[in-house]
Length: 307
Image 1 (spheres, rainbow, N blue to C red):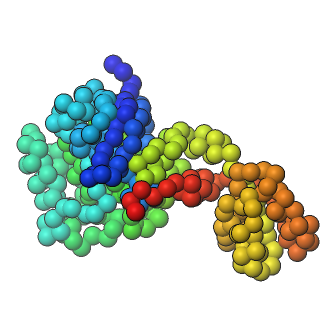
Image 2 (image 1 turned 90 degrees about the vertical axis):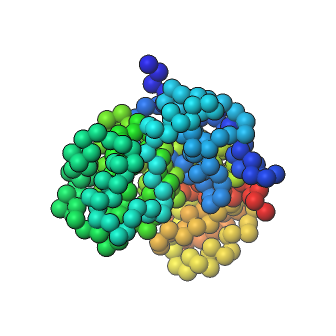
Image 3 (image 1 turned 60 degrees about the horizontal axis):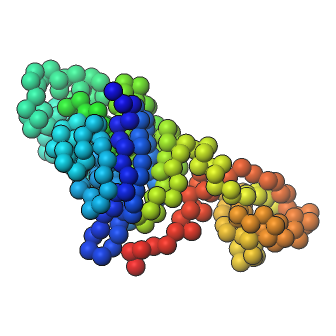
């Protein structure tokens, strides 16, 4: 059996005359956590839905879980757990009642036992009789994950699942996703959080329908060829204004008490920075690009096709 859960090429999708996804190709291995990043409206959700058979592409082909994404979408859907950004369960039902409702939809045998097992697995047993509408964002997220795992899917589709959730709940959530990965469950997740992106095994950056880069975090950073300087000193906000329009400088971004200055043209960047690096009011240091540096750079290079 192939270790590839997803293997597609040439996927394209149009909404009217607008190309939302353009000639997309990707391979995902079993058990991988694959992160999708990109600006709002860039085609992340549309791409993930096509990969999982939830949306039919206008062009391209491939397989998901051994099934043809064009002709066997129903078979794919039965093995996919889909968690949306917005909480979609019934707020006037308890946690147990919501899970029992989902189990009925899937026509599960031994329904009550499977609901109980799910409550225990996700740490929801003590709150089983609490109304879903009274839950905090983190507990709603945990309930939503329990619901999409109830039918034991082989592939999870998570669309910005931690938006509006506190840091501890986000960390707990990602711990659960990694536990599922060890069990061989594959996850596709869209996110805007860089710390979450770094928790993924591989990343794909999509901008306005085009796949710009994919790979591990280190591969994405190393292949960016981005040159980064950090500087400390007084009145950095003034320095930021003075540096921003200079040739070769693509970004000047404050990180606390430090400015990050970056660009791709080494000689031009160095020429623009030289006078300021000779100023003893500032402390300069060559830095490694962060994932955020790389993705903001990619975003600036991308052309918005929605206008």
